[in-house]
Amino acid sequence: MVVEDDEGIRVALEQALEEEGYIVLSAGNGQEALDKLAEVERLPDVILLDLMMPIMDGRTFLQARRRHPHWTSIPVVIVTADNRAEPEAKALGAAAVMAKPLSLDRLLETVARFC
Figure 1 (cartoon, rainbow, N blue to C red):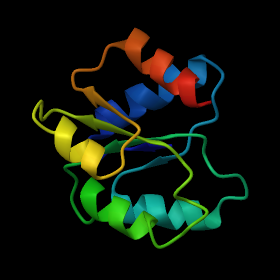
Figure 2: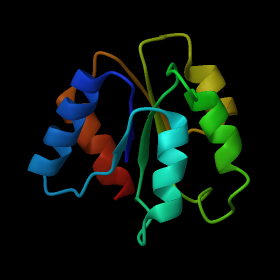
Figure 3: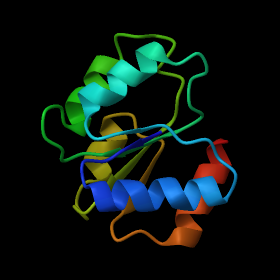
């Protein structure tokens, strides 16, 4: 699952992952992601999560996710332009942190590690 408010980045991530054979869910903010998680039959293997988004940011999404025990097992990879976010992301329970702009090779390696 890709949770990213920047449509260009979100679409690029979706396309890159789909070209590698992944089925990709996407959301433009944390609330949309929570709604989609509640609707799907099969949960995603990993969530790529931006921290800075309107409506519901990544931090609030992670807090809401904790209230659903079956969602807490999904690894979350924080994708952020804030190069100082790694300590906070780890404290929030992120499995990994990736800095924007993303390296396609590193993105695919990271996703493969969780899928």
